[in-house]
Image (spheres, rainbow, N blue to C red):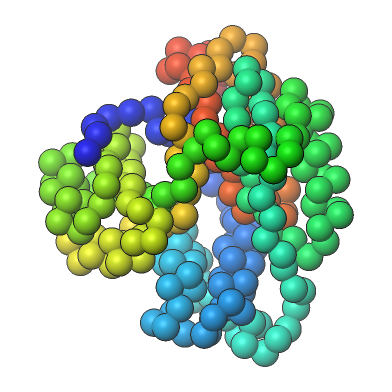
Length: 248
């Protein structure tokens, strides 16, 4: 088990402002629909759907929206989405993995490539970045869920592999095959998680500093603003000093 780290710099997430809620809900709905189509439309019988619904609830998505997304899958309505993973490099040599759900593979590839090219990055071939990461289960709790010791104890009891805590959150890692079981065990001791996902965890971090920080943030923001993009993972490490300069 590990202690504090700068994990908040690894997977960049913008502040959730009111103007972005509809976009966020759209991405959550898309994941729920895809999960329901890949198995039974019952969260109790479909682990992926159960996690997707839990994540939607963690973002305060209305129950009607969740039910509508499941019914869309059950009725065979709407587009058929394809899951695609893109790999590329950002400023400073940082490695990025972009997970996409799209109804048009050619459009998605073109858009992602353009975003990389316009923001100091370069899209690579499959496998050029993924080897720098481990595929893991990731469960995030807010700091208010408990002390570092309490969360550590709960994680060990649930069968998790690692915990990283800071002032904002507790990030719990587990083998991705055991994510659903560990998440259920943790819910019994810590309550509902903020988010639960299959994640890409960097084996080592790549420092990014100076002017490259602003360029990297623009790249990440542009990727996350794209409707087809579900998740962006990176191995970048940015110092608190550089983050403060960027915010200022």
